[in-house]
Image (tube, rainbow, N blue to C red; front, top):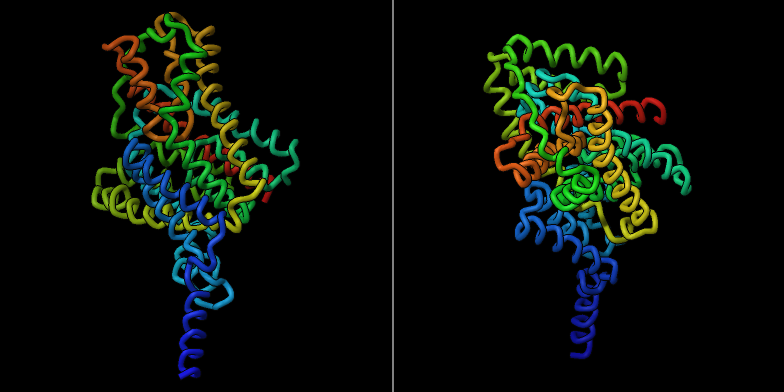
Length: 386
């Protein structure tokens, strides 16, 4: 009887050692709370639910405590585990180009083709990236880590993941979560900055309707865009190549089925896997560090600089434009790569001051330019730092 009781107690104790309760730390509960907060933001506040629901639930998956010495092969960092295999798409950097393929297939570049000078606004918004890079260097990050952190300022999650997978894989979880967090908070962060740097008179500027863009122009654009950008920055080829390829599928008129697959089913599948595995990579033991706090601070600073730079650049640019060609500076914030949310913010704020002044199509010009600009900036950093 005693032997049976001892056997039972030993087995019960062994079972207990495998449970999450026995292996939990306060850090796990902090990260579980973060995951629940992301899910709450997505569902209750409608902040980028397509991103925050997979990331938030991924954080829950990644922070279920377990005995790491038991050889269960269930953790995302355990070689050969299912989660680790799915995470290879992040760590090896092949999810982001697939996302860019989908972005290209769903994006209409007409606003940018019709008014090419809007490309300058997208370029100006990249000041946030290089400003954050210099600050990151100043506070002690290595050059490759500083470059990976700085790309958060482009407000482009796939680009941030791609670059950090090449330059600073150990910081990728914090960088990815930071980038997607600030993308989701665009409606909160950008409007106060736009009001701060513009006058009421500037907010009422009406822009002329964009000219009609021919089908031939739309077909030529991705081809010329690929050659121009990748000849200058060949290291941006994985992102830029897939972006322009997706756009050619959309505009060619003969690959509609491929364009629909790339922009819908493929993008949805990759978004699910990307968001979930990025969330799961934020294990408490690797995520809750002093470096993570610095990354979130630098990312926030980069995003503030990027959004402000776009608005301020338009104000400067208007000094050299005739009255009838002036640009409403409310579209300057759209120079960051949060498509199409930042363009919608431009439009909504414009309608707030003039209910008949629709800025959405104008804002889409710098918005899609920001996608190209952030990919080019990532290519520049990768070329110099890899």
